[in-house]
Amino acid sequence: MISNPIIDSMINRKSIRKYTEEIPTDEVIHLVVRAGQQAPFASQLCSVLLTRKKGIPFGAPLLFTICVDLHRMELIMARGSWRIVTNDLSMLFFGIQDASLMAENMVTAAESLGMGSCFLGVAPYIADKIARKYKLPPRVFPLVQLVMGYPAENPPTRPRYPLRFSLFEDEYPRFSDDEVEQAMKQMDEGYLAQNYYSKGKIMIKLERGREETYTYDNYSWTEHISRKWGQWYESPAELLEQLSKRGFKVFFQEKEITEPEE
Ligand SMILES: Cc1cc2nc3c(=O)[nH]c(=O)nc-3n(C[C@H](O)[C@H](O)[C@H](O)COP(=O)(O)O)c2cc1C
Image (cartoon, rainbow, N blue to C red; front, side, top):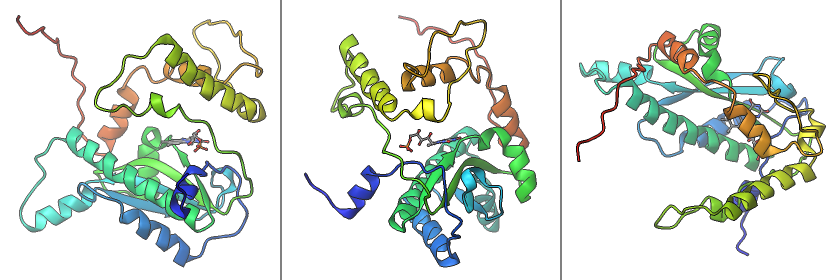
């Protein structure tokens, strides 16, 4: 098996949800963000907010908020009397690509410096609140948050789909029932063996009068993730409102799609 320190660190990474009180030095923080910056970019459409106050989730010393940032691009373009005409949906996609790559580079850099981290996904839904807290100019949209610090726990690495359920060479396959079930089994048995949901008392409540039939003996990843995407965020209105408040015009227009004529 090929092995090297970077691969080992990436394969062994896991989200950390307990931290020591040790505060990373400025040098360490700047190194993490600098390594993050060196991720490939479409247009450097991202910036990072940092808070080191107390009260950060999981007792972490650092909270980064990685933002899609069109503001700085507008400042630069205005110098040459340019303005962005590219639609905001496209800019948002490019910004999400840039910000995601930067964020993950920060995760890997943190690992290499003996730290751990955990993403928090709520930012887009509380974008306006975050914007007021950090006095964000328009056209900056908080995409994802990342807590970071020195780990006070060492959980096992979490399961992933089998590689054959994730990597498709030349052609996307048609999955057999067996392949789908194998993938589900790998995830569910992996999480059950770690008592992940029972330890954390994590179980998404069933809505709309659905009757609970699961216990922590069989509640695992595929049921958990199905409950999320089978019950939450049916309407895009909440997210569109947050985007609109931040100056992103991502219209949602229900248009009748006409079938092309034969
Ligand atoms: C975009 C994103 C949002 C996430 N949001 C949360 C969150 O709000 N709370 C949390 O505890 N973990 C969150 N996570 C961490 C995931 O739960 C975690 O990465 C996943 O369960 C796999 O576990 P691992 O990172 O330990 O391999 C998030 C991860 C990502 C990439």
